[in-house]
Length: 182
Image 1: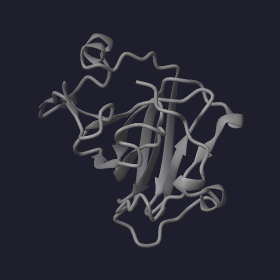
Image 2: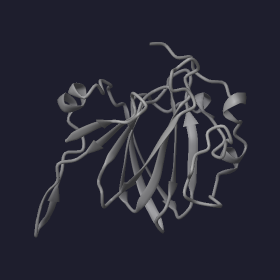
Image 3: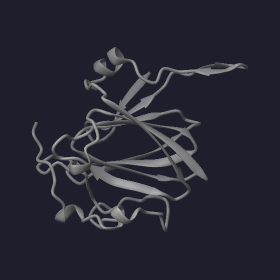
């Protein structure tokens, strides 16, 4: 497993060591000691699995009372996945990093607590798995508008399919946000 820091500290790309032959393949998805050595020292409390069709965009979501870190990967199809630093006072506040996750590249992405997260499906459909550092709490749902002009995220899709809830999200400048603590 190889861990690569992005230009935004905390957002980490995980590339697997893939072992394959004519029978198929094997890879480690999670190894607590390797993750700890890479600076990802969280306990994962919940696993989620979603399936979405082409051009569905989910996000940008976050929590305030119990912020979730998310370890995400795709097991079928391809998505463009985005993490946004939304911690007021952070040196990288308002910056984002996006990457392609697919069943083919088998990469993972760690989005730490204090970041908004979202993804859009680029293939006909995609299955998306994520481990969370906190349990889901429906009273702790927040989000930022996917097409916020201050963020300027290139989602690679012109007219995404959104939930009604995601269509009503505020802009970054109008959102209730966490405060950065070093």
